[in-house]
Image (tube, rainbow, N blue to C red; front, side):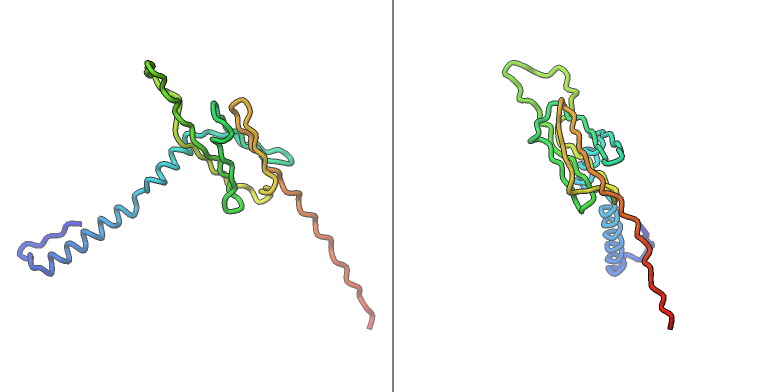
Length: 156
């Protein structure tokens, strides 16, 4: 905001102008996404996944070609968020070789999934086979329907 009134260059007005400019700058930086947010958004966008629902489980399938199990982490946050993350490292260059083209992704990857209420976070398994990570989350059994309570009627 730049409001200038001709003839009013007094220190008081100058100070007020600086305060208003500082407030505008603070608002701009407050609304800007943080570096962490941008990094996480890129990591999530570059990690496609399939999610399937079966009668007794939810299955998350993510392609992880060339990764070892130590490069992949599967966690549960906040009791209902499944987090799949890790890092794909660049291969060490061998002496005398140089890249002509580099298309495979390297760097960190991450996906977060909010689990439904009927997901059993204590019954999660993860298997990585042939470059495909399969995470299975078992469902909780449906709650038993409440039986009506019978109250004996006394004759008084």
